[in-house]
Length: 442
Ligand code: PXG
Ligand code: PLP
Image 1 (cartoon, helix red, strand yellow):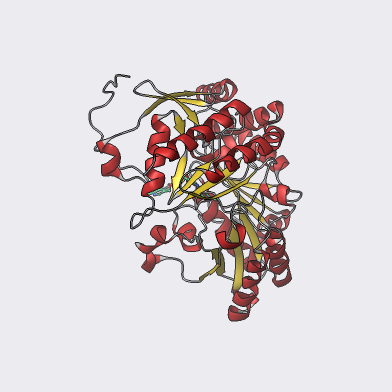
Image 2: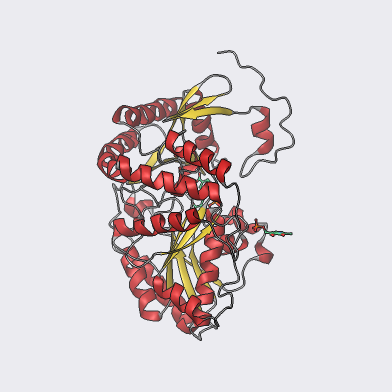
């Protein structure tokens, strides 16, 4: 296939989370997308094994969403939501609320997962302050947690490279629970691993150390995605919920990846039957068509803050210029309607066993030391090359792309999270390609 130059200067765009020099020396550029496929600028069809970045749950270029955005932009391009409003903001909030667990039906809009995390942490502090417990300011995250890149998110997050450069400027009162990843006990688990629920009890140790009266909230991803697909052990999330409730600590589930069907239900909270106090959302909220995120807050939290303010006073000093941007809101309404009409969350649940079997077919592939999965998420962990962690997965990623399959990698873990419109042949094709590629990887 002949590649044609499409752009000759790649120098100005400082790329996010990218090895810029390496990429610009051998760029991979996408030009268009439809359904399950990207097309690259050199004319390659690439099957999307990760829904962009875990976000295009309804597949690419969906006409209904495109039409809603186009129509909205020509009708009302922008409207403030500070002391003003527009109807679609309220409609979008209602539709998001309908998908949340019972009682979490107050929706604050942001523009990304990172902003959702910072918003949720601030709401947690505001809630305690409104209740007269303003001394509850300590936040608890988890090792290997990813909560975006704001200062709040990297403070509660548990990924060393994301923290070390900024380590002198992180939030002051943060502790971390241990992560739950343990291949000695849990390698090749299908769904939730049996071992590890007791790790939630570490929260009691932190409570003993600081006293519950100083702790505002615990934030975890119910299924950790970007840190390499870490599935919660059976009973772990339930235990966290119990301990938080016992001590009056808010529980925040970061569902930026798990929200909107990824695990076969609207939320992972619903899937696991554990209801947090706050849920952070983004990505698939509008099929990633326009930047948008949200925080779903319990009515108790919302009412405590909102009814606690003096009449006529702004209750929460927080918000973004683009909170509930008309185009993003229109896209959310169209997307959530589409998910329902096509039964995509149910489709994910139905496909999950096929996806699980296909992922675990890599068990004996070269370099593979673990396969794990839940819903439409799978992780394949590779033995690291001596002295070069991440190099093997990077090589696999590049070769998969060249073979027409887009996967994600983090460290030496390959992650899979395709659009929920994927079919069984495409699932088989992804894992067959990965197996073939691994056989050729050094
Ligand atoms: N929380 C969670 C749980 C996330 O997964 C964020 C917050 C931040 O969202 P924004 O919209 O600010 O990026 C995320 C984002 C990957 C990958 O391939 C994952 C994310 C972003 C980019 C790449 O693992 N997750
Ligand atoms: N910086 C400046 C100078 C601003 O005026 C604003 C918003 O008015 C912001 C940052 C925040 O921007 P956003 O509301 O898009 O988060």
